[in-house]
Length: 596
Image 1: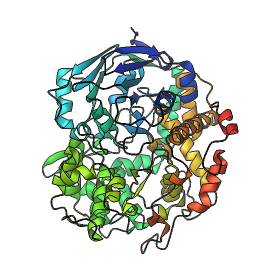
Image 2: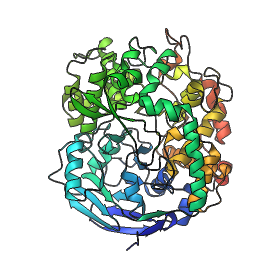
Image 3: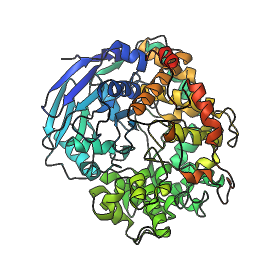
């Protein structure tokens, strides 16, 4: 039994839960793991790489799903309430980590746990109840089939009024490849089908309540550094003004003006009624209140009202996916559709992108259905069908890559490695395009958030059209992002904080000799382990690419006539990574990172 009354991160445990036989055990967190990988994403990635066999079916009994926190979770560090879910993705076949904010992560940390490692498959629906140092597998048969909101309420009533819940809805239960894990009802570990993995294990939820005190190695030193980074957040216009006032939807007008707001399934980059679905319009028409995750001074979350009902969000990516991507300009409908996705536990990015793909298939005569750009008729019912796996919705629940291939037009799926690309047309920002192509989890804007320097000028503005120097900058952002995801902290802090800021807080929290270079080396090590995992699964340089559409010019708007120049950037990227021309890490690189 672990004493959870007062715990340093190095004293936390790995909680192993076998759903097949009901066995639960705690093991000490190995020192070499947190020294080399910190926690969160890095810890989960390393555990999967070392334990999953090649060629494993992600929905088989043998896949693992890991809930992990990091060394600063539940500390005074701003945005330290996040957690990470790591697994092999059923949508892509790649290694996958999916993140969520809210208030669930601190409950895991206060229970003395660094990571919950879930294996096997229960014969019946269950949930995992973690109550400080006691973990139990509980019956969930009465909750199975219910949406995420009702499930959350029932689980809290059954366990503890102060517990936090991460659960799946019908999407996960039906093993939709776009299924999410929802926490705080409207915060999602959303990408890559993590909810389907839980569903395949008959695991409805993980519920946690921790009362232990989070200790850090140097509390006074950390307090001083936290004071400094809070001031940096206040001084930054994005984290102090734009995001708190308008939420993430502040980006709609900005990206549209640059001709990068994907419209009609990325056929265009400018939406004629972007103002009508903007963050400014959301604040004016639907805003109820702001939502803050645990110890987050930014408060980018929104609570809105749609058709008389309070709903979470919608976020920028959701507004785009269910709006301009599908030619839809009805903001209230978008908010309601987002809420429907949250109830079902399905990813708004992948759902909206797949609907947009279906609309273009109809436009091109490859699909005979009533879907049309700009028309919301029947779409809420279709979203229900995606969540429940019915009819055309069952086909779309596999994601756009499989769906477009089914109808003989694979090129219409806007995805990388099977994961749908989010709300920035890569033709308008060369570094961001390279980040999409080389992302280890598939189409992702957060692996290397080059929108900061290329679009928002944060921390400095760089020419979005230039290819020179972009490979090195993308690598820097990828390595830093991997380290941030292992601490675990919000990506938005990157607008205001430097590499050294993160490193100093990591050192204060852990007592390890971590400076900026050491932190980036940890991130680089994580990135290479992910690369090795994917290569073991058959991925290579041929997968570091984008759909054919992005090598043809945009017809109009602020990014008119631009195309992506991967042919210039990718060889330099491989060289700077220490990889060969097929993207294979060299022996020397692996030795440098202590991976050989």
